[in-house]
Image (cartoon, rainbow, N blue to C red):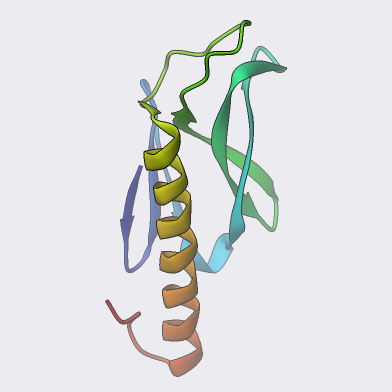
Length: 105
């Protein structure tokens, strides 16, 4: 996952998806999905006006159950820090849109 002034880029094993900040409404942590079912690991999901998009980034878990191994798996502290940073980047982008200029960094 990559962030810049224009939005968020999600890199998956076989595709890439770019979401402009104007479409992002927030972030939520909930179980990663595998074949439509929840797994033992939480993932960061991007909320948009059209629904939620699962990112490939997951939080490490010792819980038993299915796991999806298609993206980075972060320690709890690092995962939580990433979600907080995404929230801050979204807030900065919104301030930049309201002011009519680029988001301050």
